[in-house]
Length: 258
Ligand SMILES: C[S@@+](CC[C@H](N)C(=O)[O-])C[C@H]1O[C@@H](n2cnc3c(N)ncnc32)[C@H](O)[C@@H]1O
Image (cartoon, protein in one colour):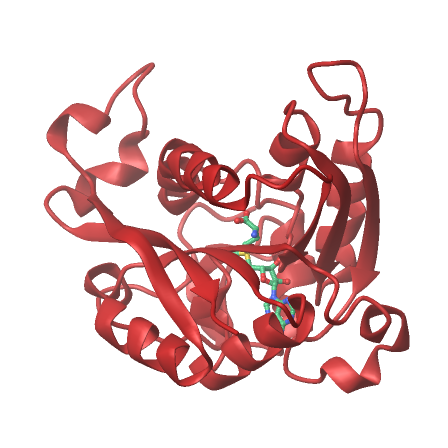
């Protein structure tokens, strides 16, 4: 392994995510740490809004290594089933092993199933097509920046129940996206690897959502890196230092109106 990353090489998205899966949980990515910190209030908010007496179906779009799937599995929230979808078999393999044996706080866990899926080509995945229009809630964390906005909302709507449902969305903030792009250093080759990514302002995400029938529930949360976040035992490691003062994350709850 070389100490200085070699020049950037662009690769196909599936290759990118399969390679990223090997280091995704260990490379000190600050967005994941911010997301770990900021997501729980959004999940609490959406569960208050859902307040259904029957257990819920959640579909996770771009579940990755199951970082958030396992949190949902391990709560006492009234969830009957989680469908974890992702483009990358490598990511899904990590998610499966991470979720194996996870139990809710009451000793029970929802059913969880993992599916290969490309949000840009939903019709090509018959197993996932059978889940279309069944979700009470779609959760999609740190995925939007990798997809065209209209494809993202089209697919979320395709997954949600026709009588309406909710979306919990988190993403890289445009202030960070203008300075950086999702990627990683491949430990085997020393290459800095990057795939396709898009920079979205919060306002354009809300505007596009509106076109597809989504309205905002509550406030959009934005989170930058603060000086006090950095250091041993704090929210972020040294990789966070260069982002002090920059907004890096946003997240919100949206409702599909019928
Ligand atoms: C930055 S990771 C986020 C993973 C996870 N949600 C998290 O928050 O840790 C982005 C994920 O989106 C997935 N992804 C990218 N493009 C996709 C597409 N077109 N369809 C489905 N998943 C996709 C990738 O494979 C990757 O697992």
